[in-house]
Length: 386
Image (tube, rainbow, N blue to C red; front, side, top):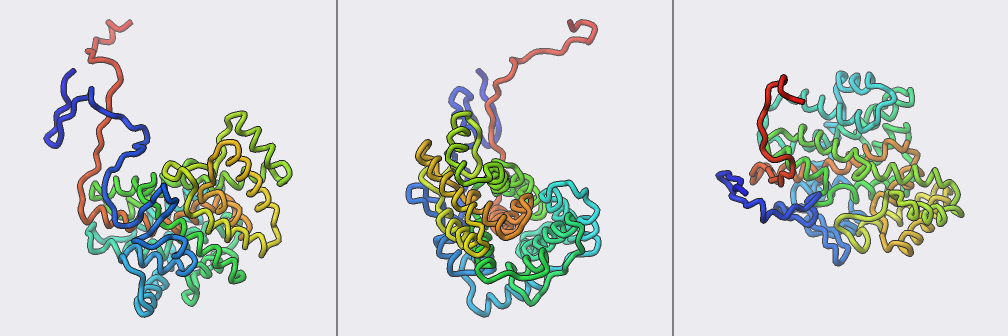
């Protein structure tokens, strides 16, 4: 068999080790986050994610991911001032969101709105402007999501309030009011937990696009497209659909047994990297319970407990972050198909950090494939083809 020749590599196909889904492959280095499966731990820039979620607001975490250190009081004040000044979106972008089909998924809406946002930014691609563009997306994406949330309900747009922190402002834009502090904290915690997670599918997609020296908006749109899939970000939506289907906590155990027996895919469980439990779950589960306590909707957490126990007993598979996040968002009052756009609001910070890291020491990402199609053959005139 002949060799595949390229100036950068010479590979003998007989020696190729194909890893479907790149499982176990290390494709680059990063300073942004680290997952340690053996200890079920996740750190952002060295800080355990559960400590960040408990002790910092999401704005501080965004600053950390982009600047490698937590902000001082004055640095945070300046960061927040800039973020709040960027929250408004243009009338044209607002109208784009308004004119989208009411039945389109909110992920389609935010993908389109971010693409339009990139078209509105006339600056040419350059590394120096990436941080400012990242801030623009951090500030404007919640406004876009909230606008779509209102329009799909037939309600008028509520402009952002520059006096409010990010979490409070998002509730204000969606519902016209800010809920109790416990609910706001639960939401803010979820943003921190969803902000970053190493080379997951959507993050890797953004890095692939960035490696071509495409712009940060295009890379983010690619990340949104990857996150939309139910095997990635869309899983939190599927978790809540599953719980609504079960309806009664008393039926949860048997539902799970039947689902496993019938080889039905159960969303919200298992993880490619974590084998003994997702490090983010205990924190999100704690705040999902706080949501149940605040709203009186205890049945979702009772169902959670029954499903979790049965899956672990039957398959030794643990929940991932999407499992507690789904019911938590539902109890906050968000429509199910907006769970993943909320994920986008958070993960924009991690994507931007990775895009900037990729641009700082770039080499185009271009893996090989092993061909297993037909052997070489030659074209016959159409008159000779049987």
